[in-house]
Length: 210
Image (cartoon, rainbow, N blue to C red; front, side, top):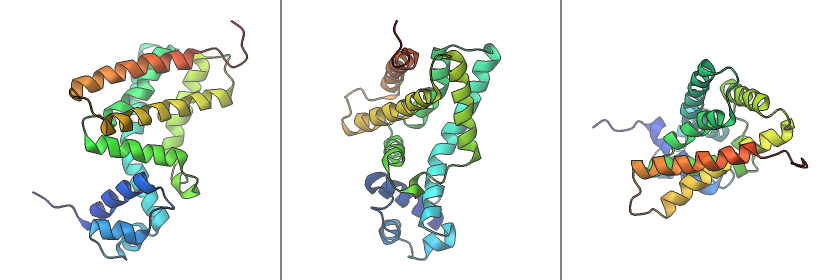
């Protein structure tokens, strides 16, 4: 068995502590203590605590955004103007796949995403770069075409809601596992989420009279 190197151990410890305590509630010393590393390891490998936050976030988010790009490409090949259900599946599916309920790592990633969404520290969000912006803009554009009556701020609100609902569900399932908390049960939960979130995304714009 290959033991993790110092950089990986620091990343693992930081992911856990940032998820549990937020950016400001986590000290560099606490991270290195948990990792069993020298205090200088953060500066050596990441430059700063903010650099470590960025590395932790990208390690969690990049597989999700890569899969979201690929799913959206597949949807657009089938239909240049896809429906809301297909867009929701392309956006939400990778979130569930990367945060499986039966896996402790999936729950930890869920908690980290929740921490990023709610953390008031600028460092918790300033790590986002071109890849994250690109997938966000692609989905915003696709949803905007599918929902032409929805104002841009409300559309972005709904997309943030997708992230929040998914992350909360994954964390809750981990904290209160059911006897059949398996990969199959996870697929069922994903289907429930897709049904619910498709309905939420399809709702009339605020103030619209049906």
